[in-house]
Image (cartoon, rainbow, N blue to C red):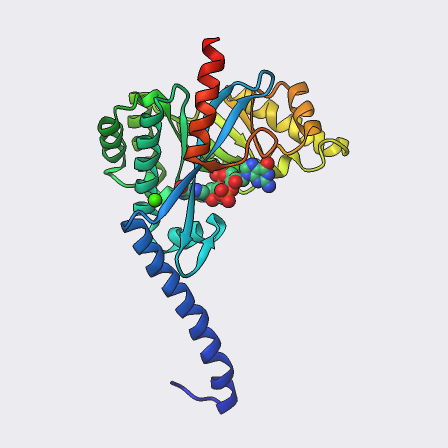
Length: 278
Ligand code: C2E
Ligand code: CA
Ligand code: CA
Ligand code: CA
């Protein structure tokens, strides 16, 4: 250790070590959780904006560590991205979501978030195909969500992988659309069928004409590109009204259903099925 002054060493070294140590510990606990089935999935309904009919379910990763307690995805997903654990985590999520979709005999797609690090791997299409085969899931019942927030790695390889999966019948949604971070032109080379409007686009739309115009323009852009629109983070009836007026077909948010454990969805699916057979 180079000592420029006693105090400087005392001040910096312990703090740095603490933070680094905590992160390393969390990394090794996350690694263990992925290996030992210590993660869970919650599912959030996507519904038709006019009829309320269920049109899909998004799988969202959850982690409750025996020592750390509940760690939010906002914390452990970036950690997984930084450490490369996201590939193993992402495969686990895909497998668990497909297992559950098969147990439910789901007739609407299950949406799974995938990271650039997964999409770029040469074995990604084979991994996905293997999981679909194993659980007997039709490819049209799987939707993969790709966030606009992260840079696509090796766009050519990623594009080839996605095209191979699209040829099977799997569809792709562009997540966090309008969050304002993307190189849009490069993303639009991907075989997308849907965009999910970032929740920030709904802020202020019920009071502020400028916010309303931005939302309306983003929806026009999506439609101009022949993409289906899902509005995320819908929390109020007023927001839903605005979205209906703008002819947004699908919504996902606390208003129409929070992310919940699989058991809760099982109960609701039974009610939906009973209602449908009436
Ligand atoms: P996301 O993919 O955009 O997922 C939607 C997030 O918005 C979820 O947060 C959901 O709980 C939250 N949300 C839904 N409706 C509302 C609403 O009406 N109001 C508000 N304020 N929030 C709402 P969550 O579950 O904490 O996940 C955060 C992010 O972590 C996700 O954002 C996604 O980017 C990432 N993530 C979660 N699971 C996975 C995964 O399995 N793989 C990858 N790669 N990322 C994941
Ligand atoms: Ca589990
Ligand atoms: Ca998502
Ligand atoms: Ca999103």
